[in-house]
Amino acid sequence: MKKYTELLTIPIDGVKMPLFSNYPNLIANGYQRVVIGQRGPYVEFTKNQIIDTELYIPKSQLYRLSDPKVYYIEFRTVENNIKVYYQMRSVAYADYLINHFYISPLDLYKEDGMKCLRSNVEINENLNEFFEFNN
Image (spheres, rainbow, N blue to C red):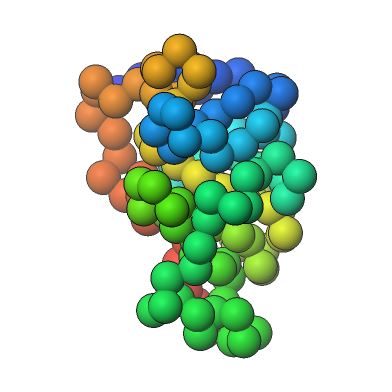
């Protein structure tokens, strides 16, 4: 299996480029970096890069707003129901930053319509299992 860095179609270091949850649904105006942890790659965004009007918190996830033990707040995109994580606490398995957003590159597209991660190869089945909820 190829390394994730070889499968990315975007630079590992962030750039100012539009990213879409599905064209023409703009989700971000750039990104900080791609973090590759034990659970695969995730694209990292600051609050200024993410288009927050495209996000909502599902009713089933509202408890996370008042629970001090959660590791992330789960958002979803309005148009495509893509999972977006907002990091609240540090984790041991990856260098995710608190107060940053994360989206799987499998769920993101560049302006030319190409996915940010090639999906024509076998990818770790746990790729979409980003954070674990530890008590």
